[in-house]
Image 1 (tube, rainbow, N blue to C red):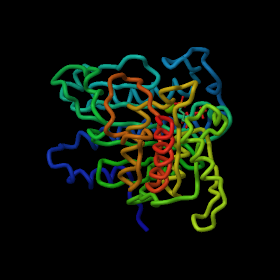
Image 2: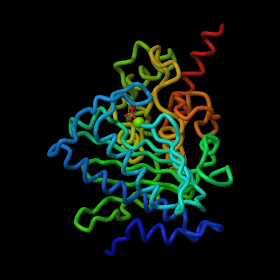
Image 3: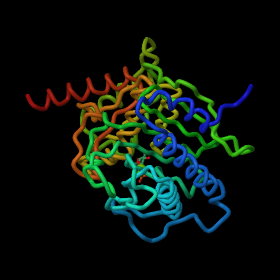
Length: 338
Ligand code: AHM
Ligand code: MG
């Protein structure tokens, strides 16, 4: 069978965008190239002096690992050189990085990115990922500004993730379904391996950091107990699977069906994950695959965004599972307000 590379696929799909002149295709291609470079470093992380922490802390006050820094630099360099992007917002940078150069003078897009998600797994040979969201700029010229990023998730033009796992995979959507590409190392190309990905409406896997159980809202505690209860009719108890790399957990649940939850906790009352470059792109992909993503009450993609590094709780995955979890949350809140 003839393989279809990411590059070929992107060009074929360009016709879907009435007014696009190939800029979005080039932007996706640039991201794909940086992903291959990052994958090469992730693969050899055990061999070279790139493992471990740099000693610096990022804007979230968390320790930064060397590979985070490397991945951040690679994506920024690729986007700057590509000429289609006028600003980048990254998990690793407190402020946006405006791009105002000769090559980018007609750039129409901004990119929000988590260059290396699941950084606590780098040192232990466990999958990590990259998450990205692409928006059309609202400002008119020069380097992009914060307001270009303060758009609801529904305004995303494209979103995707790369998982650096036993194989590297790039999964993306432009709002017309979701397609997955696996890196064939022998030819150095992402090849279409998972066309038209859809998430099962229901599943048997729940993914949540149960170590935080005592600090979860009551409704989440009750939903977890529901997942663990015996019930043949609904195939419970469900299996608990939690890698600690959001991309890997959500990718598995996309393929097999399941729910991933990162709720508010007493320690993180607004949740841990970030809306702009983690939850919005993941929500766009999962919705496009037929699933659902909410903050427990509201659709993630409709949330207003006022800060670059804004956090939100996240309930994402198979539609029926997310609905069930939200039922428990609603019942609990109703009980508390009595
Ligand atoms: P990171 O961007 O600093 O790696 O944090 C995001 C990650 C997610 O990938 C993962 O699901 C979650 O944080 C794990 O958090 P915890 O260790 O609190 O369970
Ligand atoms: Mg992250």
